[in-house]
Image (tube, rainbow, N blue to C red):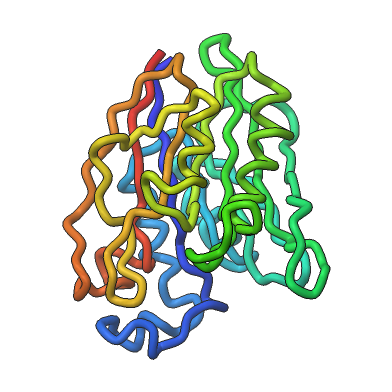
Length: 258
């Protein structure tokens, strides 16, 4: 098995507020204005599997149209509770029939389920069963106790209900975790035996609120070896989105080999 995988939060138009992106040209903040730039950036990753977060239905359709001529097929699952976005996986590999949208059972402050999910897509790669989980874990206040932290609740459920119930599979778990290296949420994945593709060499993946931080992750089963790609340099004033980087996150990617 030898493949390339990428994870990328592409920034849903519904979450764009111009005042949050003072260094970005105004024309890039208009709805649907980044579709072509996103497709070009994704194709430049040259990945066999691309896991996307904050994908809206219209953006998914535009990406499908742009990526299909290059051999990619895609699946998408939208969040519940009226949220405008979800997760998508594009790939140029043969996959097993079907895919699963696993919706977390954590609750919002008003008692409703959050509607967040992990999109799980299965592949047969060189005779091996590979399961890819793409997710966008909820942000929560950093001072929230670990047992009440909503992102941690989702991570724990993903680990218990998906990873530990299918330990024979090769797993890749990636996405926007809204947590930083070394935090309890990240440590929970490491405790399962998964490996962080960027362990020891994390770089900032976004600069929200003028603070560069690494919050996007690519975890993989220990049977796989990873060679992560270096990211463009990012500081507090780097314009995101931009013509070169059309989201408020950078994509992360790695070569995986067994």
